Image 1 (tube, rainbow, N blue to C red):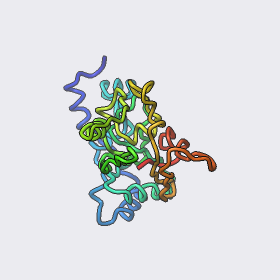
Image 2: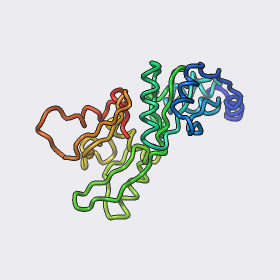
Image 3: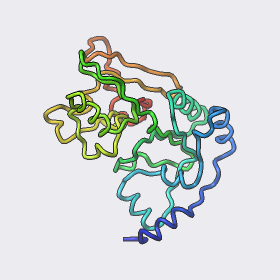
Length: 235
């Protein structure tokens, strides 16, 4: 089936990626001045962030084939990092791939050699549960299991149990219109989302109303759910 696991690990550690283009490096240094520790283009990082769990990609890795890898990775710690990266990628015309746990199996997180990857795992805050309205606010990088356990401690459940609950995030669920093992009882993720905060391609913030139903104009919440990052990034 390809390269043995031991050889595979050694091969991946020795992969070398060319340095990002000068204009990309300079744009990142300007956008993240004073916080460049949130940006990396190390070869080891680019090898990891250039893929997800698509079976064909995993077979390529076992054969020792190097992925294209992104030009650089931004490790977002706060909303302004997302906004800055969106503005930068748009100004340079670069592909931008949002990334959290990387547990997709369709190759959706594969990054081209000129792409930027935006790691959202550190946006993982869960606000206190609103027990009057029975809602909770969670950032996009919150892992599914973490959110479910937080709700369980208060006597609640989200009722959303995809097979990847231990290795997927709220942002990934929303972006892919995730379903789970009890969706026939509790509904899919689009039935559970009350409101969204997103960052649009120009770096501006977009917030949908926190209301279960609206009778005025298009439902922008449902437009963003399942868009897989093509219209903006759910934060």
